[in-house]
Image (cartoon, rainbow, N blue to C red):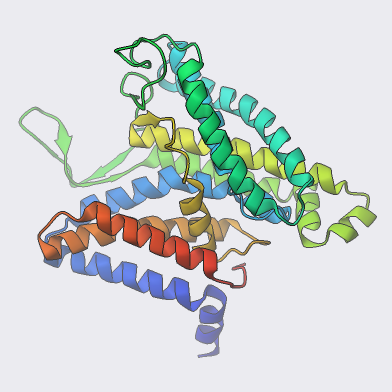
Length: 357
């Protein structure tokens, strides 16, 4: 009994309630005509394509910079990486790798400037970060029209200049991670000879996610990572120990920005499209919400918070519309998705809880 009480206290009633509700949705799905294999496939895909952007929040939280509402700045570096690699005509694994390298380059530059700005507004980081993210997205909405992209499948057809709002990755690296060593269970061949149906486990995507999580786990235990955590826990003690508080804060912002850019590349290849202009505007909110639902606070976050929070958030976002649509016999998926998503975001941003260790 004491162990159960300790687990409930540590894990938290809100996460237990969300997990029970999610489990109830999975149990009820077959009874209302929702296929479990397709549902599990969607949940794993959505988890994989979103978890790295949630992971990107951890360095800044650990360094005491708060929740990174300026995540769109990192996402913009990823959009630059992907569109430039496509402009160069690179496809497949090489194209995806070059997109990551370009993202790291621009993410480092953006993160350095972003970090220096946050060092000047200590105590108001989350508010300023939100304005930075929104302003950067609006600035790039202009730049996407002015930058010299020329490939026909990138630019607007009627003008021959300016990027399209949505760009297909079919010819480039669409699902390059999802399809790598993908495990199919229960799939059957249709008349055209293609496999369809069944549960598809995106092995390559999960391997990439695991590699990023392990990298972040090790990074936080390096000398630099430990110094960042010390700065976030007690900046005065860290300064007395010879740690440069401003440098560690800036480093955390740079790492967060780069990981956020890589996160959008993973999201794109799973989604199948590159979306520019105002698409990244509100992408920080689901990521922040998932991290907080996972048990993190504004000063502490762990890998467990990232994984649990993303799984619960994306699971709810996937299953609730499907089950309710089947019960009501009507298509209200988008309305339900907006209600559930924004409801969980409101809950996450207004709660106060201890970090899950």
